[in-house]
Image 1 (spheres, rainbow, N blue to C red):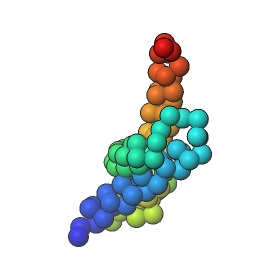
Image 2: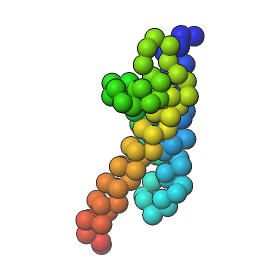
Image 3: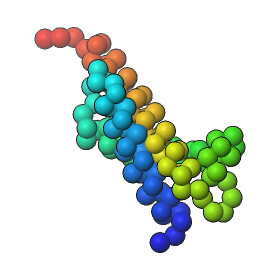
Length: 102
């Protein structure tokens, strides 16, 4: 398996973990475990891809160069997954408070 695929898999798994951590810590957000896992995985892949293009973050995580740092990929994935889960949770909470109650 190529190192890019391994890095992506690590980002997906660590993103799912990051999403579930946010979901567990912030129980007042309207996010169930399945949604937290999916959002985390998507955020993990996105966060890992985005981190490589921000020079300061890429250098901090060791994502620059040809040989990707797997710990850096895990960190970027977990951060991206946590952030996306938090954002969607806050949006869902704001939308629920805006909707009229029947």
